[in-house]
Image 1 (cartoon, helix red, strand yellow):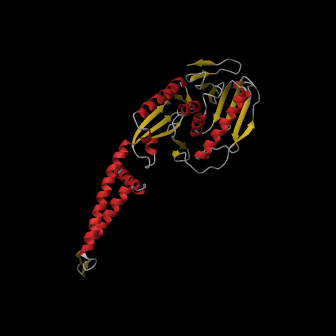
Image 2: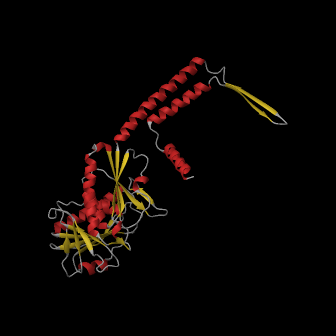
Image 3: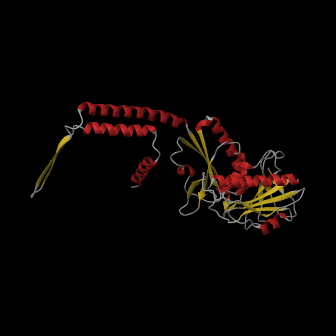
Length: 370
């Protein structure tokens, strides 16, 4: 039964997907050959029972001249041949195409692989690059961020090696995942030099599925300044509230009285981020605020972000490691003390590689582990 259902779904997918020129030519050719074959059709049909006997005869002879019918058949055959040639060329081109799917599996278990959810328009052989850190998850908490960090760093090298094997014009790069905020931000930063990436996020509305961040649907809602830090030296905090409100009390308990800037969406939502234009605008607001803090003279920025995975990824891509102050992206753990127990210091002009930073309480120095 399952095999039949799978076959049925494949037939539906084939029928509904955009038709290539090759398929259109073959379909038209077969139709013309059918018209030619039926041009001189003749036959009888007999229905017989105890009470009645019914005979039906049919013939199409005397219709179109034979020369026309032969011409239609020849044209149909030519179209089929041309379609098969184009289909063969399309197949060769598709074999060159490569869809690299980078999926980060983190805090939430998802049974549907990202690679199996891509639209049929993404043609080519598919290579999965899965980064799974769930072996360090206990009660929804990442217990071994050091291992997870190393996996994120290693995945960048793995991706680079795969890309070097392919021609740039033949590669489609897809990213999606559900991971801890610091790891997702770092992934975006490490992939900032890739010109185009198709980004997917997990739509949590039942029954749950992968959904692409696509063009259109921008609701024009942007960050508003809840409060803004002023100063000219030392460290500062930049907090962003997109899907949830950041815990301001927990921030103060963890970081003390460091200057705090808070940008928030007026309406917090986990389902209003599917527009690529909106995400680009939010990322630009974030970037401009970082530049303002740099101009104020702050030497280090602590980033606190409550946002969907794809938004965090886009924020990481826009972070300028060469010109902005060094930054640490912190992880929120509601039941921990402090509530921001660890973070990742991003690579920058002063930091050659991402480093894990642990924090005990506001009055102590952070312990760094490379």
